[in-house]
Image (cartoon, rainbow, N blue to C red):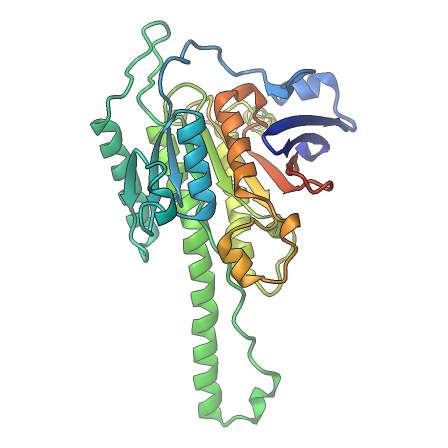
Length: 357
């Protein structure tokens, strides 16, 4: 339904160009207003519920999961160097790629266990964030508004990975002896389910953990949560069931957390039906957005697909720039619960961000 409101922004080098497409279909002005969206010719669609607070003087804080990877390090570096934010990294790998440590460093780092289950991951992550916020000199309450400024302003989940399904059971298994069939099917079943579990651990578990952290460790002033989805998971994913399940579940979680801020059209509809979409412990002005790339231009993807058209891949810096614009200017964010497609600009320069939900 919100799919018919297209928010588009393109990056050409360091120059940002906004393109807003109006295709509201049967939506009336009242319906658009109910979504918490209003038209601004200079800024596109902006949230009508964003609060104007005098917080520009304080140093904002971000948590980046997957901070050691190509995308996570690009986001961390942009937030730290260009937006002057305190950045707390979290990853199973080393703190930063060696080639970056001479240029800048994270303000803090949470080393996560590689094979941790979801409860352990969530516990380690929230305890790490809690300890970090206790150690640094954070802002307390805003004396003018009473808002708590001590928490995180931004959480970015840049971690993830891809794996295809293991080979299917051959059609000629009937030619095997019964014992051979049983052994083969047991091995195939284990391989299949382990592949699905690995994709869940890589792609979905960090988002679930980050969603929990967001509900308890964010500040009161326009906090932002951004996670990586996948365009592929908007359609059936034969040959990569585990990946598709994990990413489509990620999309569902983005929509659900987005509704829980209480300001979206869906949450208003739910309240109209007598359903409470906003738990009291989740901040009402949080924005949760999913970014859906097709292929990100990273060293690992180039190694896996050496014959790919790299010019059509999304550069990590483009994603970092877009996230940075949402951190700096809440009015530029799409509505909470959005899924935003990103793809290379047709002219070969930069990337385009387009609202698909």
